[in-house]
Length: 163
Image (tube, rainbow, N blue to C red; front, side, top):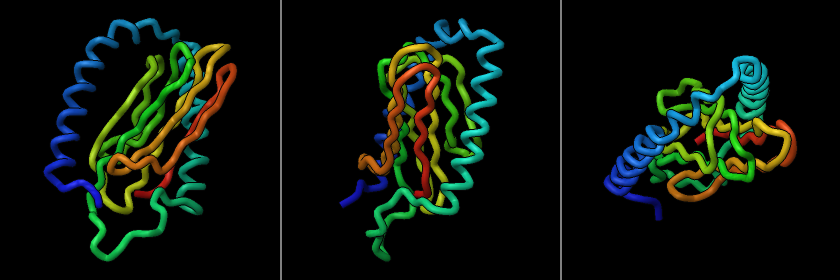
């Protein structure tokens, strides 16, 4: 019932092109970053990331346990961040397995990549302001598998698991 490899690749390429265009537009907006706020946010995100990695490895998987022996080994992963916050700081597991961070991203925000079965996925978004909400979601092959929402000043919403 999943997507074919060609469909995954097409969706990946379309999303990559869209995100590249979106990033060019946002470059000017992200130059407003204040260094002191960035240091606090990055420190908080790294702490949350470490805790979530430990908990994710110990307790969680993204799948629902219904994989069959013929389940695909490559999945289209999509991170989505929405909400009413003016801007957010993000920490997420990227397509190469490393950690990426942004300090002043505007909503809605998405990131799509291909991942292998068994890969760890993680997205964390912190509200940069005193008001608003933040929701993070993880999708595998267009099916939402994780979500988290937080509301208020400088709150953090986090979702993670194994592909």
